[in-house]
Image (tube, helix red, strand yellow):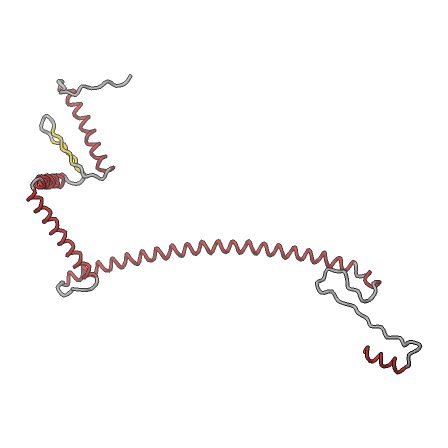
Length: 239
């Protein structure tokens, strides 16, 4: 069975009232703490018991929370009046101009300008700020360079692995070529004995890309009806 609804009214029994107050107070404080953490809210909680005892919780400082509350409440009342609203925005604009002027002055000092009015302590503080800024810039630069070096090393390892794979493939191709050459030249050696019976003016049937040519020139035989001079002339031309 589900839990029945509780009627919201004052508890007559003092003991039950005290027990309920303790339980609900702790639950309320817990919820306030969770709200400040989860939602990044500034929370201030104050609880007074029936006996006048104070229980409070604040995410930052109860005094700061109360001051902020009073300030916002006063500004809210001022915004209801048009004249007060104009004065409020004038003060806000003046504050913003003052902050802008201060930031511009700090920027010029960081750039090394308008340093004549600064004391030795101010200059030392400025120097410390610049050194801290320079240290931060160097750390960021080193981090970026280290990241780039790691990336280059990773790419270099990938290229090295690809080179190893290509080297293995080249070695495999060389081995295949050697096996093929053994088979080709082995066949040529077997057929070398039969090459002597082949007539001249023939080319070997091997697989060599540049096979040798064996050419022979026979001496011309003089005809019966030709004179020796004509036969000699023909022999000179052939030579």
